[in-house]
Length: 186
Image 1 (cartoon, rainbow, N blue to C red):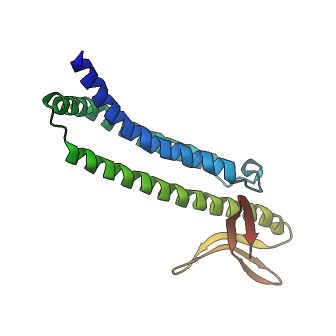
Image 2: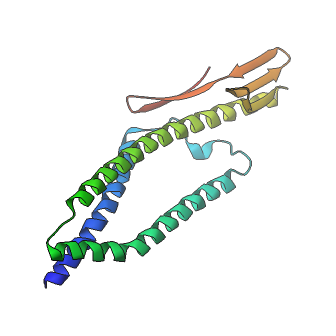
């Protein structure tokens, strides 16, 4: 029975690290969904060419990364379980490895939180630029030429509108304020 308990403890130790990281992501997603409300419905915006393909590519990229990580986990899991089980059986638990693992887990959780925050801001900026572009489309019927994401040396212009009465550079910003999201074109 001790062998079974040691095996279960080994599996619990290994899976707890995975669930800690997944728990951080789940908490961040729930917090974002509860606090961030966009003033525009993304599905109602005009779609750029190949938008559906872009979404499918991004989804498949995430699936690919997930599959690769799952493959690495499946291959290393039996070795990790037998190693931890052997240490428990001998009575010499590798505390240095546990402390190092916990520090690595804390670092990965911190990086997950930072990257998630950056991703949330980038998605807000993306939505703001799409919403502004959606509004500027109507100017084309009035004879204006509209360009988006014009790259310059060291910076970009979000939207450039050229017409008979001038050239207009439009910078778009999306920002959070007390759980509300504001989209601004300057």
